Image (cartoon, rainbow, N blue to C red; front, side):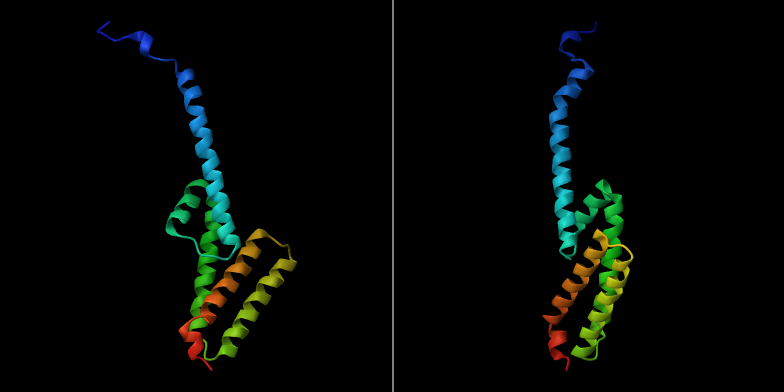
Length: 136
């Protein structure tokens, strides 16, 4: 038999039994990582590129939500940059939060909470900026 030691080859079922704990640990780690990413979104924080990549691989629906949140936040931040006064910036914040609140009445969701927190976090960052300090 060309020198092949047949006894050293283990059945495929044994290989899968051996690998199952590693697969389970990897799945648990992925779930833990996804939970941490969801928590980051719930806090209104922006995701890093590696977190977005993980979502794209393991939770396409949440990835879609995160991308939507990111675009909405960017549009909000751009609008804040064009504020002519602190009152304008604060008015736009109130307007945006009221808009989200109106949608919450139609059915509250985790995504609406993420949106609210993202807008509030972006506003807090803007208020701490030199741009806001220079407004009257």
